[in-house]
Length: 146
Length: 319
Image 1 (cartoon, one colour):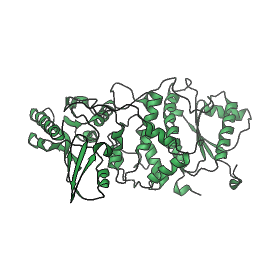
Image 2 (spheres, rainbow over the protein chains, first blue to last red; image 1 turned 45 degrees about the horizontal axis):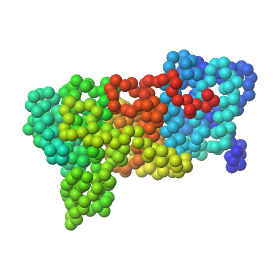
Image 3 (spheres, rainbow over the protein chains, first blue to last red; image 1 turned 30 degrees about the vertical axis):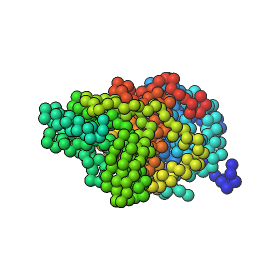
Image 4 (cartoon, each protein chain N blue to C red; image 1 turned 90 degrees about the vertical axis):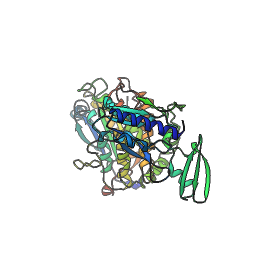
């Protein structure tokens, strides 16, 4: 970690689908697994519900990283929401990195309701990646700048 | 076919359609008030059809105007315009039955601004088009330019000069360029992320948020654009780099799998912001990941409203 960011902790917005990833987070809690307190969870009905607006809005308001997690392909509660999400986010991630957003700010993953361990693990990995990058400033709106 | 013959054939066809009563209006181009400008015009009577012209400055995408006319419409359309028509028909914005498409093969449109720049801002009074040359006449000068050097950026990589959908075809078909020519995207990708960001931000700084790109775009037809919405207001209203970038990124996402790369956005932009860098990236990804090119077939489902169980997952963390 850069010494100029002493005491800084990343703030990561996690959009979790209600049926799998949110339940996975719950399982991690019930199982008393330790993971960094860097995430702020927003529960959504389905990963297909997540609009690119949500992600840009999170960055605009000062998030250092964004994580999107849904059910594994084939397990969607709404049959195909995560398949649609997968196409959408393949394009979004490609585009954001194309315009020069630092790689490692935005992450996508599948976590099922039984994967509490994986949830804790992913949060740890994402937090470390974002911590390595330092505070985000590229997409922060004027009124949210420090 | 030279521009004059082409114009005459278009006028003749428009006159016939209007006389027969097949259409109520023909959307085409007329001579603009300045050289190197052709402006959209709407012809309602056979007598007026003589106004219609065709030349290398018909760069607007006329399918943009279709929604304003509820009745039967004739439209003069080059390759990219017909691709936009295909998308509009697919999205049920336009009814194929109430449309007569006068297709015109296109060798690429000329960017008048580029020509003016070449003339050092001197006043141009006339342009004569020859096969591969433009003869520019102005106050005390006359120069001959190679046509290919002044094409719009979108026309340089266009692979559908010939209309993909038409009822009448004016003139002979043109030789098409190679498909999936995305060297501009890979060239940009080979630069460092910091470099790319600096370039994009310098482009965004020129954007004045006039929304001309959106208003010229044939596929930006939403009743209320997200950029104007206030509840919720997803994208900041300012002309700061980050707000502007968010607007352009979201516009590209809305056009993902729909953008036919006609370049109308770039042609309409008063400050010539390089918006196409974003749209081209999406187009190349859509071709590479989903093997889809917008605006070619009406019966092909849009890539973002369909999926395959084995779609690429290369971007997913911990597969």
